[in-house]
Length: 324
Image (cartoon, rainbow, N blue to C red; front, side):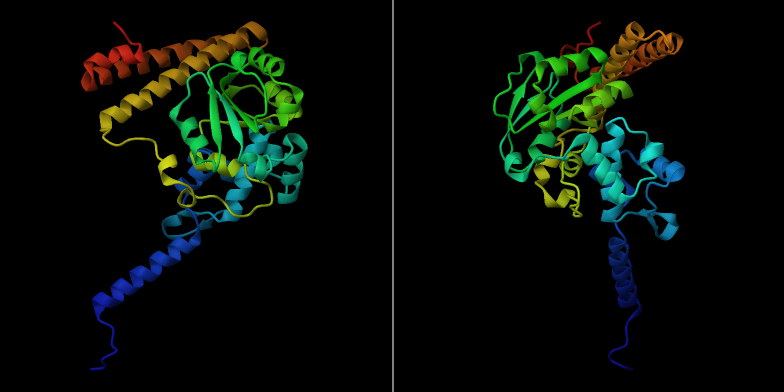
């Protein structure tokens, strides 16, 4: 027998290793792309199916694999859509056209690198964990937190981040009143609910706009300078700053955290929809229906949160504000 003959077990190990390396070389799976871009997997699939924004490679079982070029394009498209541009228009643009339009609407996607290493002001009422993680993931940033926009006093901030869940007309006016024009190009507004009118208005004045919440390394990528092909991945930044503190949390504790976030989001949606009722009568019936549905959904989620809190921590009702 030839001493060089490969044994069956060795051959299987070799083939497995080769195939594994081959699959890794194919690119990023869709779950990783969602974290790198801040775009949900459902939205990525919808953009591919309806608008052919990108065309990923396909592996075994028809799995999607994305290159860094795909991710860069998705990031650029998200910037424009978050600024109020229609996805149906953006999807037809070439890479250069997207870059030109991004710079035309938002200016440079991020301050120059020397300014990025200076101080940031973070304006946020709730100061959510995901936003804290985003700030920590930015290299060299010293952040000062301000609880309310009315308390912000502009000085020598290199960058300003405003966490504004409901970007209503009233909140738009507050932003314009409190922030000098010269700060707009170095101000990022992270919102959850907004109308295109407010998005286009603020974008036209130089504000950067992103729909949150975001993964830490998604914010790193979204603030990169256009033309940089390398995409920041979870392995290339401090892993501690990208992991929500979950040590010791069991399933029920994680459920409590997720349900609390849903209740807060539904509160924000109700407030936003109620504000639309006061400012626009054109879609009065639709907004009334949305408010009603939101209230019902919130009631269901609050009851679910009560059930979990009772199971995890009977005294935790005081912390959630769900007193009976």
